[in-house]
Structures are given as C-alpha cells and as structure tokens.
Image 1: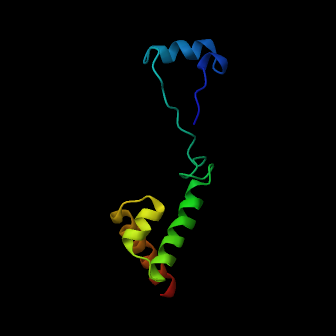
Image 2: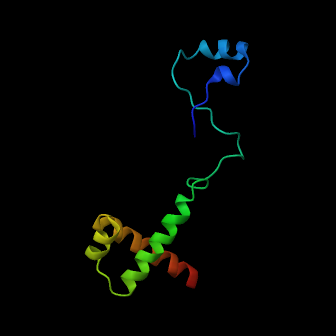
Image 3: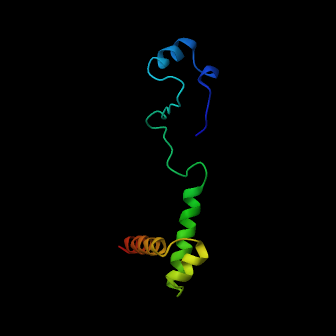
Length: 96
C-alpha cells in the first residue's frame, strides 16, 4: 500500500465532496470486492514464513530443542512451540 495524492488522480469535484467528511487526514480506500489480495501475496512473505516454519518443524522432529530453535531463528520459545503444534496438525490432516 502506498500513499497517492488525491489531487493527482481524482476529479476536483470528488475531492471537494470527500473534504466534506475528512479534512487533510489520511484515508484508506479498500480494493473492490473480489480484487483483494491475501496477506503476503505481493511480497512473498507468506511463502517465506511457510518455508521457515516447515524447516523449524523438520529440525524439531530431527531432535533440535525448542530452546535451540528459538535462538537459531530469533523467536520466543512460545512461538517455536506454536509453530511445531501448527505444523504437526497440518501433517496429521494430510494423513487423514
């Protein structure tokens, strides 16, 4: 999401109408229904976290401790436990 000056893209009469409701503040205009993108879709962040979480689970299954994984990935031990639990649940669902 980026900042765009309304004067560069909107007609003057529309700007004046909007100014009846908001004066000089930022306003968020959501995408049209059906055109929304999921979190991390553009940046690839969701994919990268999925890969990282699978690696964490694999290392845990190979014997790495929660403490060691939290230090290696700079996450809290609680976050590591949550990731392990979520990945374990996904694995069980795939088997069913």
